[in-house]
Length: 198
Image 1: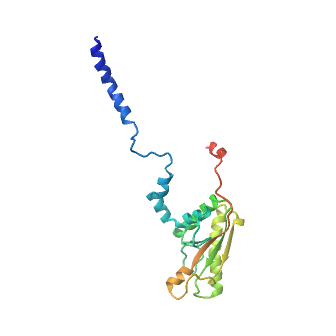
Image 2: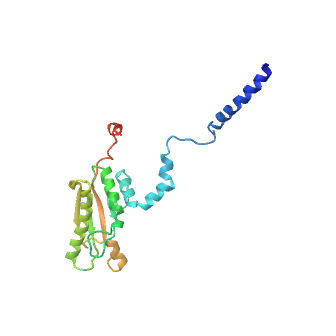
Image 3: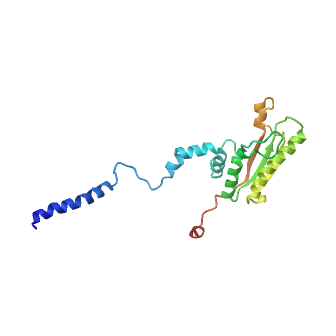
């Protein structure tokens, strides 16, 4: 074979390899990052998750040092039948979020306060508010949270946040509040020995 014929054959053989190498080359105009957390933290999925579960998001941010105008008080959005102490089960998302936060922050101690409006007998309202606060506490205890970390107190109608003149105002006064009593740490760190067992 002549040398002239071998060179074009060699070029033809190298063309697909060269094309593959060029196709795999990074685009110098594109911004690459090894840390996608900024995209995740500000992405649409994260924003919609925060909007869907504001209680857990606000509580975690508070524990990590973000100040808030409401201080250490967080309202659990839970619906109850009128006069009942057990919640409507498809409205306990905030209570489930509280459980997750309590597990993730093992030094967190809270008080759960039950509040009612002023309709009806004050003694019955106080008992009802205590039963509702106790229900949340029992929910947490049955799922492994230590009793020393959770207090439950019925406040009855003694601490309204608005007047009790309209149904809308009375609805705002009927609430469960989580107060951070003590928190002096950060989430439990993941140790290497725990991961190696996977």
